[in-house]
Length: 248
Ligand code: 13P
Image 1: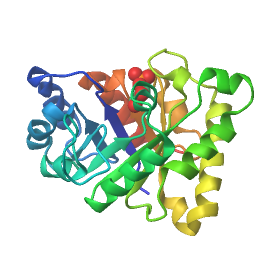
Image 2: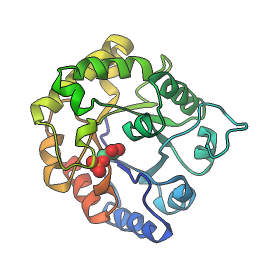
Image 3: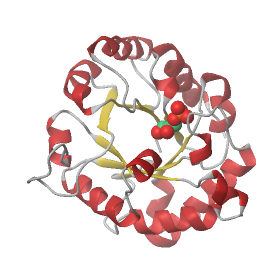
Image 4: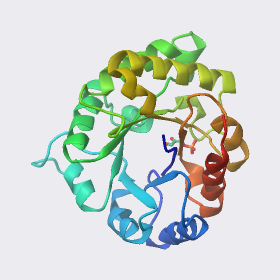
């Protein structure tokens, strides 16, 4: 399995920030892992032009429909047309800000697969859910509800992002990450059989150059989904290098 370092720029970035892409590309001319950057939709086409063959680009959401009267929305085919190979779906910020349900995320994932995109489906508990011991229940429900039966290791990446670790500088213990990633692998194996061993499982939530190596040494962590630290090439490059060097 080739590991994946994914950056989620969220609602950050204008044309000037595309210089970061050139810097990442220059620092990793022949990367030993897959690199994915998901900029705002406004930058997707221009970023894709600058990314070269070594860096994949992706959207941060798509509509479940192929086209139609959905003002402000973007279809999976439009992302693909703009150069995307991936799309993040069901990020906790979309679940919170836009009330996205597992069923809606599943529909969007199906649309992404139909358009030839790889879906990066996000799951993760809130702090309140963890505090009352519901983490695995919540993650299990999100997995079951958000991923369509048609997904395969070639078209699905799963990102575990505890909501309380996103943008907070707080990271679960390595045991906590391992527990959830082992659980996700087991759930996917129960559902998809042997192919589940090849589905990349990313950890996301306050991944930085300084903590990446230990996170990447954790079993069943096949990469990261990085927010803030993906905005600067120097930071993201450190994470990419840590993933390239990861042994477990
Ligand atoms: P941070 O790396 O900024 O915590 O964000 C994580 C995230 O939400 C990536 O999708």
